[in-house]
Length: 158
Image (tube, rainbow, N blue to C red):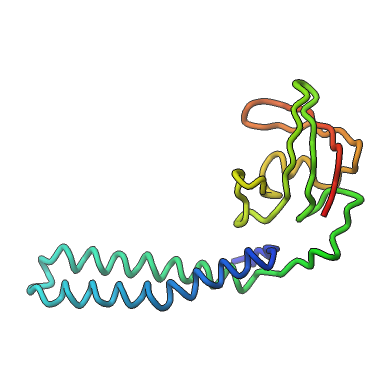
């Protein structure tokens, strides 16, 4: 299995670490209680609660393993060393839609940190991929689910 390196901000890395810690402590403890309660209710061969608790335990352990793998391949980005001469991860990019003149500002982040509500888009999204490497004043034709769109990069900041 190939190891996919992911880049994170300090905030994103801290959030993942906190989630993993919570799942390993409280999550495992809660599942253990559910299994113990179900086991106390009698015959395990016909105990749906026991089966459900064991399934939940399997899902929890899979999620913990996934987070451990993510964190094992995570790299912290130094926001002070971001090159703003072209669009890259952690760039804050202002783009103008050439068709309707609307301007939007996005920060390009890793897939796991993307949140459109806060203006953070993934470098793996169609728009993120289309903007990477572009410079201020460049145009980018990007294929989106809504069709091809053309944007002009009006500003790049860190």
